[in-house]
Image (cartoon, rainbow, N blue to C red):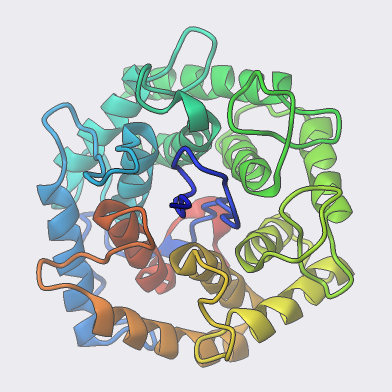
Length: 356
């Protein structure tokens, strides 16, 4: 059987894991704002609350979130994703109804940092450690701006600094990254994950070598296909919709809204990923693709957002399970719920990595 999970031991296919999170808008205490953002209905708010409750119920005593399926538990990656979705609701380590969960998740991530700077749980996810590392860097960078404890803030800063170093050291000659720091290879989804980790770290005030990010963006340029899409890896042919959406998010996050490559890739995404298209879902990794597409559509303007969000909102509300969760592709409920919550909460604008 072929492994369809991007975290599994089988071949990584089309996942473009950049996790650029655009969310915002609860009050300082984690409550939904009194004035509901446009297109966020009462039903949407209820779905969000149920999803948050589900995630909180799945946190372990050590602060981690784990998947329970046969493809691996991936505690660092899942904890980072779940933590980001909780912070997307306006929760911090000290404020909001899920502050205890955010605080424990942050502690788990910090305790997972190895001496060489890699954020990874030994024995559980070494084969795909750069994914969890990138997600964790993103989460910590967002958490640092919300942290009120000077000692904890210092610990986060040091972890980010060490994490940036190992990302820079493990960059391939082409400008990308592969699954572990010592593989000296590259492919699109891991590369995008590290780019977003570096950008979030820089936004948080961590020194990031510009040449490292520039080299990585060149890698994406080299992956562009004639139809505007992005290939799985430099030198390969065939566009991958999730990687393409993630690449556009990276360009937009860098402020390159008028970059011809980004605009061509966006047209590709609208044609091949948009809800209701004939090819929708035929390429797999539906949650991944829409995580990225939702962010891109949010940033591209009100017209695109008004066209996209109601359809995506209604699709997610219709597919939420009775326990408040979403089953995310072939990875699991923690994964799917975290991604669904990020998408639904885009109008709230709580995390600074990709705000309008």
